[in-house]
Image (cartoon, one colour):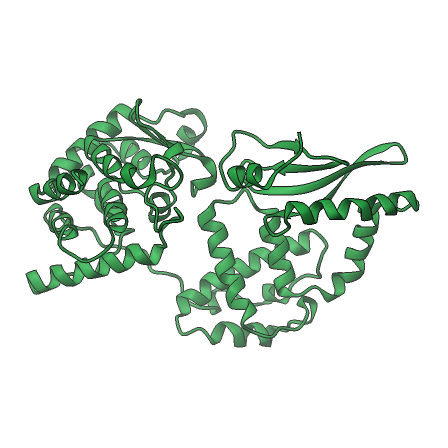
Length: 402
């Protein structure tokens, strides 16, 4: 059965259990990766050997555009040319003129298995690079690199960009696309500054005020519920904003974080508590239990990370006005806050580590795959009782009744 744009749109960026292919016609097929990315391929024979040729990526290349490429490729075969070999030779001729943007495009294209958040970070670096004129990669001098990194107002950002660019170019070097990049001549210690390790741990009383404030501060309901979810679970911001309904098993009270959404690249599980169920009951009226849970607009897209941070900043301003003094905190600090406070309540470290989605260290990492779901559920119950103000439950009830 032939492909359709509707069929491709339904699959695009939806996590799959394994990679698979969907045949179209005339040798064209769509290869679907576990991450949900889609690549058009042309399958043919040359000298009686089966071969594949990458036609393009969907949706950058439309289905009709991919189909229009097939007659051209078949014409080359009839002339006695192997399209894949010709592409490789052309690529080799162009290696000497590869730009930094070219390297990033190839790197991102080849690393579709990375989490959405990681790819987002690489795209952020790519967008910054595009704002500047560069020589071809093999002509970039150490002085050019130094000037680029010194231009950052925030030297923490310079360090992040340095690491991402270096990773990308060293990958290109290992693939023999470029010569050894001159960025390696820069000592890491001399580029930017490392982000300082966070120390902020909120008191349970501060978390109570934070949850109380959510019902009174301005902001969309989706953003308020997303921030509440982070406070109640200690999850990463990206895990909350990219949460999809198919990640949740409501019947079994289980939240499954798939490998492509996990920072560690490994699947892990968290239990779903009663308060989380209340939040989901509110959200389902707006999403019909499809796609992104905390959808940011009518088109069902995920919230931006800055919208969650902005709400957090408005809450901090309200708390500061109320108390007269307040140590700064971010949504990410809720992870340290949950872990520290629960440790003080006697919860064992291996349980809090699983709640945070961390891999266990040492021999346990290799041999112990248990995730202590029952113990996690008990710990979340303790955490909820520690920080839950009645006003937040009223806020949920009021919005659930709408």
